[in-house]
Amino acid sequence: MDAAMKADMPDSLQTEDRSVKQAIWRGWRKKCPCCGTGPLMKSYLKVRDTCTVCGEELHHQRADDGPAYLTILVVGHLLVPFFHFGYVRFRPDPMVFSAILAILAVAMSLYLLPRFKGLLVGVQWAKRLHGFGSGEND
Image 1 (tube, rainbow, N blue to C red):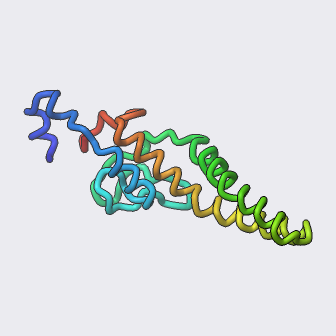
Image 2: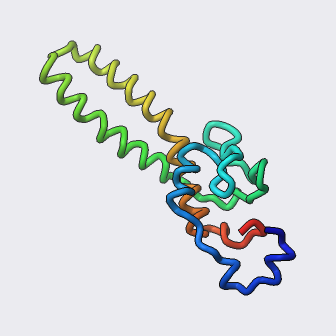
Image 3: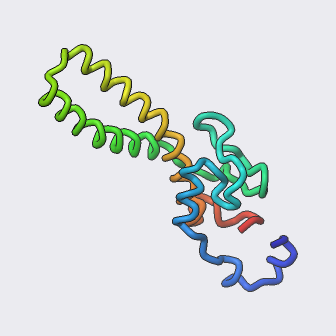
């Protein structure tokens, strides 16, 4: 919808609901929460200022430390059972076991961190937080 059509619409119609579930899924896939096709990131953790496909402004995002906290929470909760099971069942050498768990923790963290950042940007976009509700593409 173009800006001229939007200017003629009442405010109640301009603020249509955005699907949080869809925005979360698009963010998890590191895609634009608005169109779902444009890339959200321009580098590993750097969010683009605008979507290259639909032009949605993404510079409003304020993910801050949220993705890191979520990553630590999930990785910790997933690795603790492996740690307990592996140590009780197999009794490996502590250095070998520590090295294996460290590699798993780093690999999982590197995979999850940008996805959690995209997820949080998607939530912010869907809920119109931090200026996401004031652009032309609303």
